[in-house]
Image (cartoon, rainbow, N blue to C red):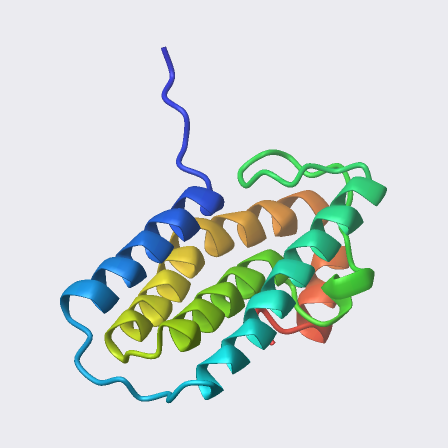
Length: 149
């Protein structure tokens, strides 16, 4: 029996739990005073919105949202005009928002680690698959739109 791959939302959940644990166990420095920490709602909301908009764009193009599944269409419209990876960028914004809401410095160390993991585990393989599937159309898109922002 073939095992199921761990999908990006699971990585996001683990990162959020790790951030909360770091905040509770090793808060180090509380660098954002209350009520300024509520500014974390902005990146959190933007991250959620990016994910919802990207999901909508995938569904409109009738292609898969799941990593490592063969795409039936190259999505270059909507939020994909701004970034090639709006869902991963959205996850990073969600983590940033939560980090600001928590107010302590230690949870923020999770964010670059999470971004690195997304790039290594998912983005690289996904982009290779897209290049193989869509060739010159992918190449033109990749030259025009940045990987993150």
